[in-house]
Image (cartoon, rainbow, N blue to C red):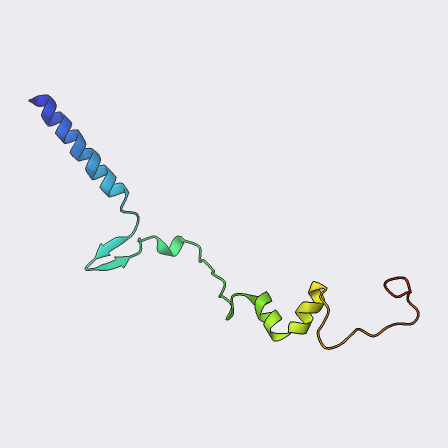
Length: 93
């Protein structure tokens, strides 16, 4: 009988210890989550503000499609490239 009581008491103590340690440093009073009493000792955190459009390269390519094609090495639509007479032509002619 005593072993059952000891076992039950140790399980209850372990449960109370687990619940107490998992509650963290915040306190709930009247439905409000309040910080700990030492919150003024913590360093402030800075989170950089998100940009208005989260994909800057995509936005740049939408605003300047010819520039995106030039950077990719693709020919720009709108006609053939001008021929420089001082340079050899492709194809060996």
